[in-house]
Image (tube, rainbow, N blue to C red; front, top):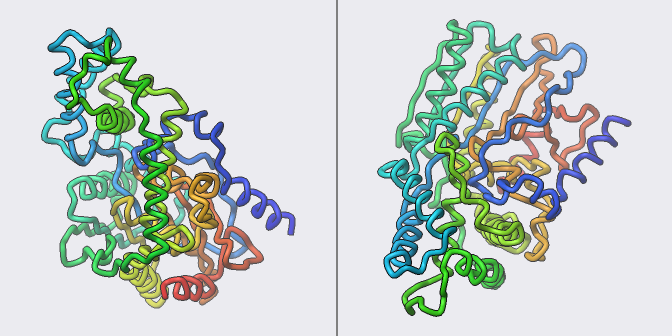
Length: 418
């Protein structure tokens, strides 16, 4: 009872996000650009007596990447370069332009590619998994790994599996990245439901929040010496959005040794993050009254349950690996009922207090389902780790948190899949 109460209190605390908390780690304002922070939980809860791990299903986002489109670099560089040509750049503006040129030279023709940090993240995650579940992962094991056909996902899979193979050469790992299997790895947009009048109204409100956050006057004045001389074609709103995206993504290429985060005030970063947070949660369908877009994960969810049932039936220890995208991990966390993705409000101005996506889908985000069996029986427990931290499912009762009976989890997931 004491353990259950403690976990309930932890769940309530974790669900709440404050502005102070966000600004304590300013790079969290990058939303899905946030570089993987690593687990805060160092020691995992031991399983109930007699239970041993025998299967892991690991579902991950690719690691840190370059921006998926370098247009943000080009927009910012072109606008500041034009200002420089007519002598309007401030010393800070010249510094920013120089950093943009360095960043763009490195990012050229690398749109969306995995960065060096992204590869390290997956090797480190694999290493920690091996140490945490050594009894399972140190034995000869069949490992099935599949990724999205995106290069960054394939390379994330490769880094993870190479680390595992180096730790246990007896692993038999099969890797694949094929359009044939995409519906089991990423979301299926053909399943996306249509909008409703209620969801359309919320999107209009979200647009107001997003646009209000992009107030460029102070930023432009810090970069331009005389804003009155700017031509009518100069768009400060576009410049601010471009610089935000570049500044937040630079945390994923730390080897460059440059940062642009200081050109924004903490309030500006928080407000822009809040706009992106609302848009993500609406687009995924986590907000009450929004269209249930999370159904785009139905095939993935079915695959997870089928894979687990197959291993349970065969009775041999195994591991299944999937490497996907943020647009898949977020709805999966919701369909599984993980506490971090639950409890959203349709009060969009305060939505961030209930769910903040930087806690769910940073670069290299991952959901681990670890299955435990008692003495070769059909008594199966499973626990969930989100970004390598144990988590709970508020919608399922259990006497042994964070461990749940697989049959209860299976029934719960099927009910949410409808």
